[in-house]
Length: 71
View (cartoon, rainbow, N blue to C red):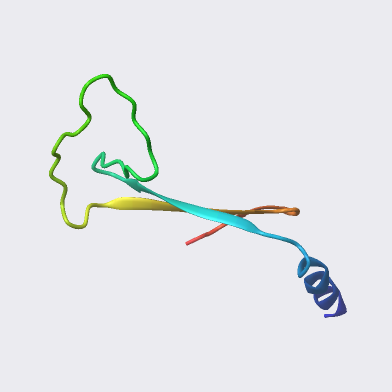
């Protein structure tokens, strides 16, 4: 028990960096996160479903390694 308390005290000063990203399975590209350069006019109207299927990936990095969310 003492070891767990000491370990949690040591980790409290560490910084954890985390981020998540959504991948739409229907090919939709979020224009706020992705820039596409083209010589043609990129203003194309594309219909998308209201709630398309997507995959969310989350990861965190800290000095001890990589943290992954398990489900």
